[in-house]
Image (cartoon, rainbow, N blue to C red; front, top):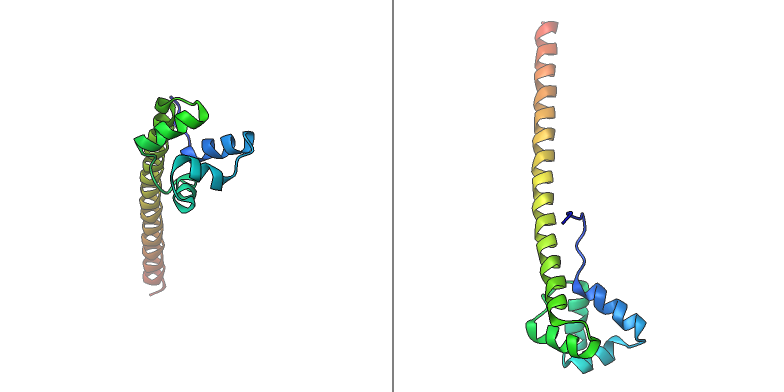
Length: 116
C-alpha cells in the first residue's frame, strides 16, 4: 500500500457519518454513552478508538467493528511514521545548516588568511 503524507483520524469518518445522517455531535455522544468532550477529542484524533466504542459505532452506523479498528490502527501508524519522518527531516536540515555554516566559516578563515 502506498504511503501518504497525511494521517486521517477515525473521527473524519465519524464526521462524514454525522453529516450524512444529520446527527449532532451531542446526540452521537449520548448514543455512544460518552461525554461530548470525549467525542470531540476522538474526532480530532487526540485519543485512540477503544474496542468498546468501535462496537458501539458498528451498532449505530452499520460499519463493521473491524473497519473502525482498521481506520484507527492506520491513523496511529501513519501519525507515528510522519512524526519519525519529520524528526529525520529536521535532523537532515540541521546537519545541512551546520555543514553550510562550517563551509562558510572555512571560507571566511581562508579569506582572512589571504588578506594577511
